[in-house]
Amino acid sequence: MLEDVARAYLQEAANGPGLTGRLATKFGRPEPTVRDWIGTARRRGFLSPGQPGRRGAGPGPRLVDR
Image (tube, rainbow, N blue to C red):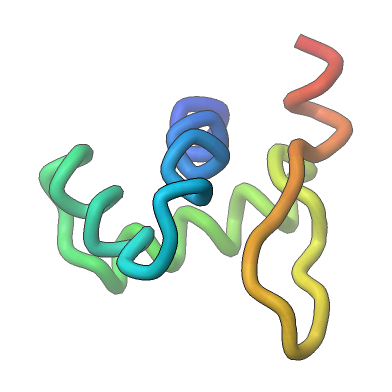
């Protein structure tokens, strides 16, 4: 599931602000849940780590390997 979240995050990131809301709609879950999933995807390597003061992420090592 985290792989799906990471791929959806990367696709939606190009569409600008409101990413978490769009993902919440896509997955049918509340925004806080989606934020938790994104954080977990970062920690588990499906998305790159966050950069202080910057938005966005790239694919993490576990996503690239698949």
